[in-house]
Amino acid sequence: MDNFTFGITMLVCGMGGTILILWIMSLVMGFLGKLFPEKPAKKEA
Amino acid sequence: MADAIINGLGGLTVGFQMLAVDWRNTVMLLVGFVLLYLGIKKDCEPLLLVPIGFGCILANIPLSDVMSQEGFIRALYDAGIATELFPLLIFVGIGAMTDFGPVLAQPSTFLLGAAGQFGIFLTLLLALALGFPQLDAVAIGIIGACDGPTAIYVTSKYAPHLLGAVSVAAYSYMSLVPILQPPIMRLLTTKVERETAMKPVAKPVSKTTKMLFPLVITILGGVIAPKGLPLLGTIMLGNLMRESGVVSRLTKASENEIANVVTLFLGLCIGATMVGSAFIKTQTLIILALGLVAICLDTVCGVLMGKVMRVMTGGKVNPLIGAAGISAFPMAARVVQREGAKWNKKSYLLMHAMGANAGGQVGSVIAAAVMLSVLAGMGIIR
Figure 1: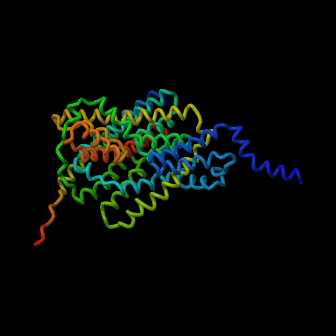
Figure 2 (figure 1 turned 120 degrees about the vertical axis):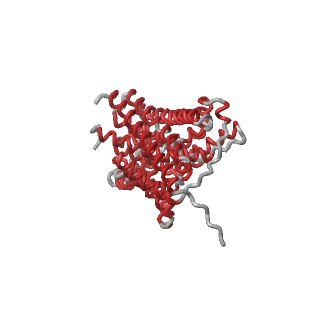
Figure 3 (figure 1 turned 90 degrees about the horizontal axis):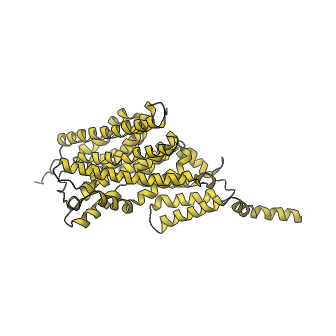
């Protein structure tokens, strides 16, 4: 494989893959944050 | 008898003769001293630069056998670098030390962590353009992860002959982040942008979410980029131990004893790879220059992503926080806070920048994992 093809493939798939995974992570963690919200500490009686 | 005495004395002077024969060892001894000076006097990453500097001195003393087949550093190298064990153990410690709460409180900052990895791939292109072989270019690009263990893991696996140069570049530039980033941040932003005060992060993150995070990222990242699973798995194991709170002995051991011992061995091994004959080349200078470019490009892309987010949120985001989307944690976040406060004393960007910075920590590991899996997919590595 020539260097140009290699470099562009790495840029597109590598950077694209990184952005994709982190974008999915942001969605999943945003969803989990809503699903399991921090509960306020119970006041002592 | 006189001959025997002369020969005996010759044995004591042969080291000096060798120093005179190969000037490169002398230069590397000086490099070792410079690294020690930076670590001890200037407080630049002393935990690494001190063992690296001393390892460099040990390996460059003429007739030194520390890296020969029977040498003690060779034994450490074979056990921990050749097997990739040391960087992975360091990752367990990093995971145990890192609070990913700020990025979980505002998950959109994961994208700033992604933008901060652009430098890796752009530098890879530059290295290819300069004629480096493909796997060498990958190792050089990974300096842009701003993440020492990741750089060491990838380089030791696919370009071990570049280990010294890549490691020194990665750790040296990481410690130069406070000097390198502010001029780029100022250059790419307007005064109005820099003065933007952001609303404080008020949303707390539940313990359940914090515990699910390492599991989700390990499974999701591991399925998409399985070649990087050792990197992802170890950092997330450390983080799960931290957040679960039930294995405090293991957490403390990971972030203290294990990380300290491995850091010492890792530094010695890296320093010992910096032997004059292998290190003093034009190629090393080019690698150091490309490493600098990589970290500057990370900052540029992070700030540009910050500007994009500012436009998308109608001006609510201060683009300076994009500069924190690299792995130098928490140094980059502190730089952003300091820079923001310079322009607006009421601006408190630290928590936002910490989110981007934690995103950058994850982003650098993900980028390396993706890179390795793409290389495997192309059949370049197994």
